[in-house]
Length: 126
Image (tube, rainbow, N blue to C red):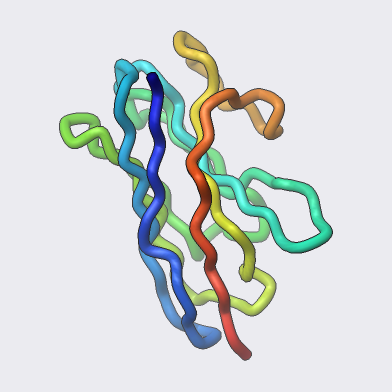
């Protein structure tokens, strides 16, 4: 059984930083692309960043480029999202996700992922 557990969310002032972590179990971790999505109230769940299994390729949404960094530690089965220069519009529930195994590309939409964590709230105050 695949389990993804996020941690590290919280309340931060604009301009601050947070570090989200996703601990994965029940899958051959290095064989899976890992992604972070976010969903604000009344909005769709959108991709924020993703990284391929070997870490060789990453994707960032335009809104977070140069501010967020995704990384992974295959030995520890964890994926991390470092978020700097946070803005109030970054406020959302952040989800860790993985697509079906064997996919080497980075799906850009939520329907391309079938494993999800429970989410962690990130709130950025102005």
